[in-house]
Length: 298
Image 1 (cartoon, rainbow, N blue to C red):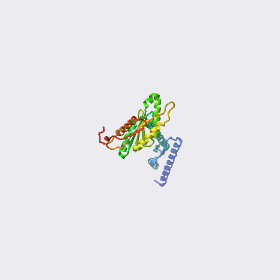
Image 2 (cartoon, one colour):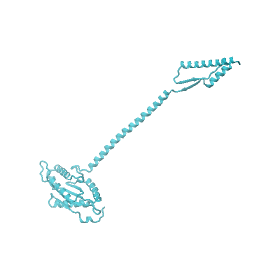
Image 3 (cartoon, rainbow, N blue to C red):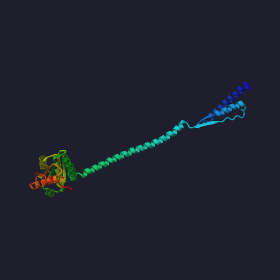
Image 4 (cartoon, helix red, strand yellow):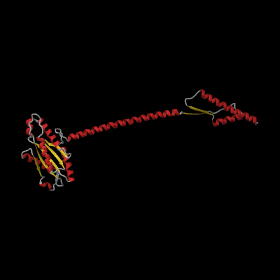
């Protein structure tokens, strides 16, 4: 084959390739597709085209068409963003629900604690006088007894009883009697103002003041001030003055052989002596001698 023939066939192959590329470009421009399409002859098609051109079989030339189809980045990102948005919304709703439930639970817990504290205070407070009741007194006595036992300090007790209160209550009525008890309770609380002084309503017209760290003389002086304050207390209109109290005083230093009932019993015995000796007075008593002896406590 001559050089001119080879060059002619090469030119023909190039022309066929250019024509095929123009046709494919025109087809793609005439009918654009929604997705990204790439048309090409590929290595096999280009080789077949060249062979056919060199062999002269251009009349029956069949060119393979290879299509590469794929989604655009915008479509891929749109689907991902949609799924991510839905998932983020669900997570945000869950977090908001948890925060709301936590706040409601915190408020409910605080309300319940406040209600329990109020009930606890109410259960340990005398509703008439506002002083701690007998139950609260017993709790404080036990705690202060143990503290004094550890520290080796004195513990005093005043037992206070309103003189002739039964006849006073019968004469002026229960309403006036209740007002008088409340006034006497306020007078006792205002007189025993130390942080370690604990005043309580022991029962009926009887009150108790627990004194931590006070010896007998200090307790007696406080009892005398209480008697004077009650005697000088202002009365309600129509109610005669002259209402007094009797006070029994007991002081001891807790040890391994003494018990709480020794202190309460001694103060109660001193109160009985004050009543028997004319009322409106302070009487102090010593613990019984057998309180220093070992005993079995149930």
